[in-house]
Length: 149
Length: 491
Image 1 (tube, rainbow over the protein chains, first blue to last red):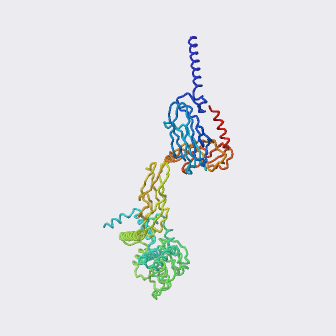
Image 2 (cartoon, rainbow over the protein chains, first blue to last red; image 1 turned 180 degrees about the vertical axis):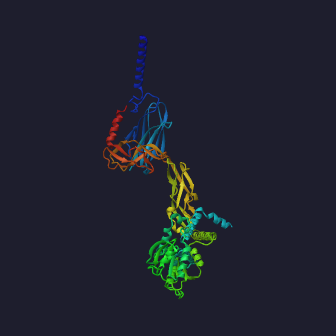
Image 3 (cartoon, each protein chain N blue to C red; image 1 turned 120 degrees about the vertical axis):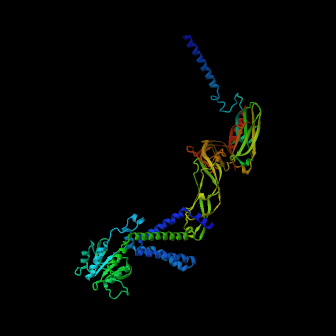
């Protein structure tokens, strides 16, 4: 009887230990996801998405939420830290809730950065948003900004 | 025949009720006031009104104007001049008698006693003046009466007119089986046609008969002859049997009961028929007279709408109704009497087209619809739903050259709004009111309201209607430097 109790106690301890380890390793407990840092998963991971005035040396310049129409162009920069395989994403541009343009961008494995831009005209003033979607159309992120005087 | 049938089809049940009701009112007026001066004056006014309508028909402007004026004040004249008669008719009867009763003699006057008394007075040559009122009140016409209220008897009558009695010179008023007043002074007649043998007593009898519907018996003191005055006439009587029949007739007690009842029914029937014909003629002159047209702008009311739906748009707010009817009715029409109602019970989400028909329009009696403009209304309905929408700041103006707005935080980031399903399915962002950039020189916090567009959108209960916007403003050069530093650090 005593031997049976000992055996069961040992078994319960093993189960609890394994459970604790799996919990600590789970995405709920992970800080990396919050920071959009690469994860050893099969999932496409967006690490950075910003609106900027220009792209210089494959990096966004003057990231902001308000852009003057005088700069003539605005860009949406997206960087992916983990691309499992060659895929593509969409940059869907909306002006005042109405679709304006849609750009299809190819991503290469293992990590990739890509951007799309629009030329600004006088009629483009107002609130904008860019929806970043994967090839299945799932929305990964939304960027909101304004074009002003 | 076809015209007659179409005419019959145009008559509504309201018209029949209208005619019957007014006919009955006229008939009741006849029953209540017949035999009185009021009835004669009412008849005169009716004749005046017919003359006025005829004058209008023939275009006699001055005559019609004069007749209109007279008939207009006639009602007032009747009330002032005949107030006593009206009062005596209305006071003497209860509501049931006024509405559907027929006048009957309740207390029988003992005619035999009166005739016997008059005969005795005549034989003894005792002067007497006996008044039998009918429907009209004598209070304002007679004077100095002494209330008596004694039962009629031969001895009583004899004693009233006995020469030594202080009240023997006046008249005795008999109503029912009682002597109401004695020593009553009657108004004298100024007639030149009165025979010379008649004295003051006979002149008084005729005077009252000229001004009222009462019957007066006068017994001459000199000759003992009996004379009866009624309806402005006075005549001498030879036999008592004649007096009996006169009194019976005056009091509505005919000798042959069956025959009199038959005659009474015939008179009432004729009166009822004349009332219907007269009112029908008036009704025709009002409602089927010269046709007039009018156009009214009436707002459309929507009823029985599903509470879960809301009206988003309508093609029109009001319709023009082209109405026809007699000139009198058209002139008296008021816009609030006309209603246009559309039943939205079967309406669905989206566009609905309704035809405006006679069933949707309420008109006053006697007014007919000729045309509706426009005949069709488009109503767009939408279902009310709730939707959570992300909030976006609507920046305007120009940020100073050397500044850059690098980041903002919005609290709350989403707002729940209530509105039409068709509207909300096309909206994925709700914007704030415009925020000016011109004065921003550093990071800060501002509170702003939401710009609900379209205005039919509402913020759901429990959601905040003010948005806190925390913005980060940086100098452009500084921003670039920071970015470069970061880039260098990035592996």
